[in-house]
Image 1 (cartoon, rainbow, N blue to C red):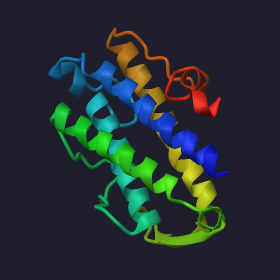
Image 2 (image 1 turned 90 degrees about the vertical axis):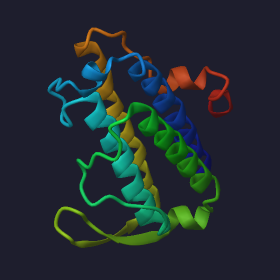
Image 3 (image 1 turned 45 degrees about the horizontal axis):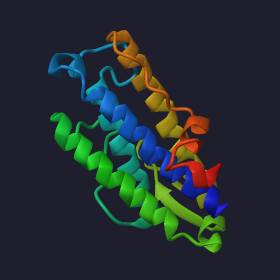
Amino acid sequence: MKQHFEMFAAYNRWANQRVYEAAAELTPEEFNRDTGAFFKSAMGTLNHLLVTDRIWMKRFSGLGDAPTALDAILFTDFEKLRQARIAEDWRISNWVANLSAKDLAGRFTYTTLSDMRTVSQRLAPALAHVFNHQTHHRGQMHMILTALGRPGVSLDLAYFQRTEEGREFA
């Protein structure tokens, strides 16, 4: 199971890099344009992904900053947002690499943002949610790029597994 999550951490890092490479081609106006996505723009969507990863990593590890709103805008500047994303992806990868089988089978407790409820759940399913959530919103970024007339980004897991970074997981 640990290798499964290490694969998703590596895939997550790789896919985010590809999305950010595509987003780097956007003009500032395009980056901020409301395209009808849930978090409206590329800027809003990419900030949301960073926000939620920070929230979950704080829940998992007890470390780091955790925003208090899912639609928080941490960075309006694209390059600052990209550097924060790179750092967060490495943080996630390193944290996953240090998990034991016992950790993955264990439980953790946290308080929800929406209704301040205390939740206790197993770590492995919650970690699967985090990677699935990233995939969901990267799909929205693909839609945003398409709506802006930009080329799509190939983000398939199978494609990642055929790359140098993903070959060990194929």
